[in-house]
Image (cartoon, rainbow, N blue to C red; front, side):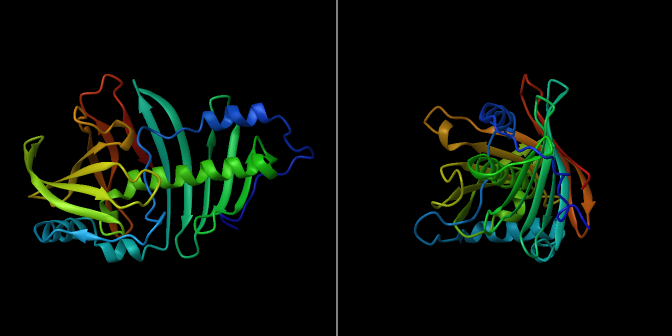
Length: 266
């Protein structure tokens, strides 16, 4: 029996206090900038990679182990940790069976309560527990919805470079930049009406020497406007993860909060 099959021990009494659940949900907030799903919300999405960006993307996939290796990856597990001012603010552990869509996410909220959610990423149906108590009805559905958001957010922060050929994604070459002494091609990424935040705009900074994405720039849809500037995150500490190569750290630059998103147990 693996983590996707096991549930917490059941207690005799179901949690009945919605205020406790609301506190738990409030404390399960992801790090800044939700990720996205490629699931369509209205009309079928289109996909476009500009010709001048195609070779850059393909070289990037190759430097990370290959997009086919990513698509064929049967399972993935990791711990998502958000750190600011040298203090862990949130941490949750994920297990994903990519063959059938089974998913499990667990962690602790600020009150020290353990949450466990087991669901299917295609159907979004599943079960949820808080402090070992099985939830039902609206309480369960609310935690399932939150867990799906965490799945989208946390896996996108881990796997974003592999998602640039998804349906509904548009990629163009948007100049070049020097990042930490390395000349990078700057790819601008926009979206059709797909995912949780289709109005986001991203930039992938792809090092011409290593062909890896070493910086991610983003302007979230609720921050867009003439005065908006990119939030910049350096992707550091690359390591092998099965057949792939992925960085463990995303470090926000010029940030007084000293924000880091760290992936452990890859």
